[in-house]
Image 1 (cartoon, rainbow, N blue to C red):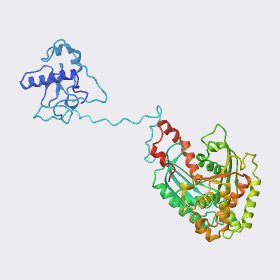
Image 2 (image 1 turned 120 degrees about the vertical axis):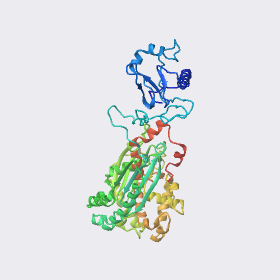
Image 3 (image 1 turned 180 degrees about the vertical axis):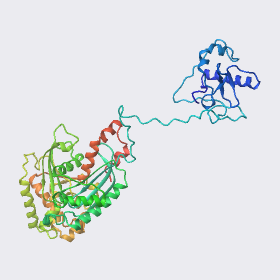
Image 4 (image 1 turned 180 degrees about the horizontal axis):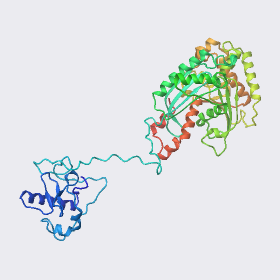
Length: 495
């Protein structure tokens, strides 16, 4: 009910008010005049001003007390027929936030109870409309109101345009340091094809890459993404027309790609594999064999282990050689054992320039191991498991012994090009690249001997997603709110 009307509650005072109201209506029906409170035809109460004698109506047809009547409360109420003598002169009205007054009988459009058979008359003042909801609380005094959160506020996107592949991941954070993949895209575009010979990106390679990036842009437009990061690596970094190509990408697809340096690429590779390095590990060598470059990071762990694995990188290097550049230099179709050894020797010379102090290691050191995050090591794991079709869930995180890696490399080297292309874990797109990757892997194994190697089917995209989520503190906020649901935790990284 409005502020001008009588407020009827469920307590004792409400009952007394209802009795007085009924008593007044009975007297009005009998024609008995009332000096103060009267009931008019519309059922609303009116108050006569001693000065003017006019009836003053409040909001919604309710009576409003005149100031002069408040000053002469005792005199006015003493002459009232329903005055009870020693009762308080004014009935206190309590305003209770969030509670409504309840009355018996039908209510009119103005929220007041009316006499049966009579229609409420038009009020002098408009009916009070419900007030709009209060604005969102501001973050600080005088600052702007907090923005509304978009429906897809929890989605993150990462795109990696490499020398050989174009990859996209759209994910949502789940439990601590994990996320659920919502959508993804991967296509071999061979952007660095012919780059080693000409120093420029070829028109055909750029067309293939832009076609794949247009599909990625369509996926991003279909999602409400909170934050995204789109990067390009070695091919755009070393090509003399790399910036021209990125301008064309921006004009034709609307995507704004950034070229990252080799140090950033190495740190992102390490960030993606944080959950694959156990507590018992004291040191590790992580490598990412790419299409145009290969990043290697030496990791030393101590008792004060940080959630950011990149904080424990003691030394790192980036070799200007990858599976695409090495296979173009030595040939990828017909690879003999002699050609394979020549590729290994070239990478070994490059590693000789990497000044890295001793980190232990050796086949007898259980606290040291290798960890590889590239298509080369995942292909070896798929061949080792004899999978009828490549399955990431069975490959990611698997351990391979030193003897198993040697056996897989020897098997691939014994196959011809057709045999490699027929394997479901290799296929015709990688048949000419896999042995070049094995040569880089063999040079790393000879530099840092280890009894085991862990396979990681993850890379720069996962590193980008992990860094963005940690920067926004999504896992810290979820931990304060009580963590993720059990279903979300079970679905983390399963896609």
